[in-house]
Every structure is written in C-alpha cells, then in structure tokens.
Image (cartoon, rainbow, N blue to C red; front, side, top):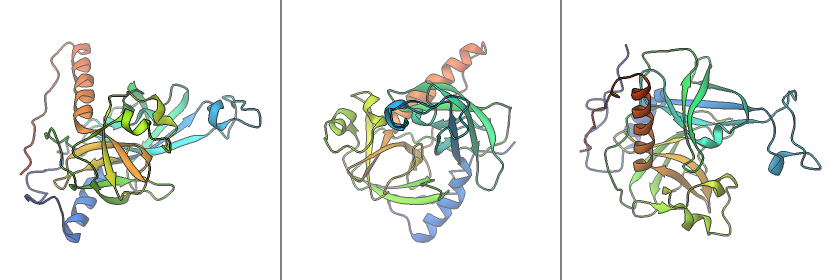
Length: 266
C-alpha cells in the first residue's frame, strides 16, 4: 500500500509563504502525483450555450457530443477524487480520469453539489495504493500568501501556476456575481454565501485544479475566472464537503468513518 505523500519530511519547514525556484520544482514534481485529468463526455449539449442555429440540443447518438475537461485531486488511497460539479453535470455519458503518463480509468460521481461547485468521484473498479493529497488545517489566510496550482489549461496538461491571494481570507460569491463583467456563465448557480479564494496571476486555471500552499497542502479548488482573477472554493468549504461524504459513507457501511490526522503548518 503506497503511503500518502509524507508532508512531514518531503516538504520544507518554513515560516515563509514563498518558495525558491528549486523548492517550487520539488513541490510540482511531488504534487502532480495527486492531481488527475478529468474528461467528461456529455449526453447532449446545453441548449442555452451550445445548441445549433436554433439552440437545439444534440441527442445521445451524436458522436460529436461536447467534452468537458478539467482537473481533480486525489484525497485517499482508494482514488477518491475531489473536483467541480461543473465537470459532472446531470446529463453525462461517461467520466474518465487519468494521471500523468498513465492510462485512463472510468469513474462515477457519488456526490455532487452545484451550489458549492463541488463533486466527488470514485473509480468504477476498486483501486488501492494511490498517493493522495491532504487538506490544510488552517481556518483563514492572509492577502499576499503565495499559492501553487497544477492545472490543465486547453491541451497543456500538468502546468504549474504560481499566484498570490488577492484579498484577506475570502470573498463571498454574491460580491463576485454582482460584478457586471463576470466572465463565468456557470457560476451563476453558486450559493450567494459561498466562500471563495481570490487569486492573482494564475491566468485561468482549469476547473477543478487544486490550489496548494507552500507546504503542499490543499487550500482551495478552482471554480471559475472573473476579471482576470481565479476564484477557488475555500478550504473550509472543501473540508466540510469531504467530511460529510466520509460520514455518510461510514454510516452506509455500518461503521464510524475514519478520521484523518490533521497536519500542523509550521
């Protein structure tokens, strides 16, 4: 059984939020093992945005049905993946995920919450021994903190992005929604009170791309782009969403859910 990435020894102990180029390379090489590409084939086009001349959706026999492509992050040894609800809409044909330089495997969505833009995928066939990421234990973040993202913009898989938090801790979605120039169409369905990290300089991370801190812990999940800022679902929302899934899964199996040890950030 492969262990989780050893955050106690593999990442530098530092009070600084900035990493040297050598440290960034180390973080990228290790963390890309826990990031996947998510490809979704839809049953039909969304008639509002993707229909033909008269907005007519395509049917399930259409071999050119649109794909959605983004990222996700593995959260346990069984290959459980946290991604965005956008990538797994109600009407879909299939979901395939893969890691770098590996074959793809089929997954299914077991939890989906469009209001939070979050979803959980699991492999259709049981797999064990994956490296997996850990969620940070922090409650709040300071403006200017450096963050790292591993993303798949367009066809450029496994691209590193370096940015900085652009506001103190979080924005709530209604503040972003009220901006008349908001670029994201899908984000109109998000909860008004959803907490979001606002990030400078990542220049359009792909949906579902995890946002890491300098210690390699997940602090957000990219949702949409507006006004040249990336917006990621805040860590506190991710933790609650994942905990709810673990609790529900534990109840279904007739035993308490396994709690994970929280790691402190030095």
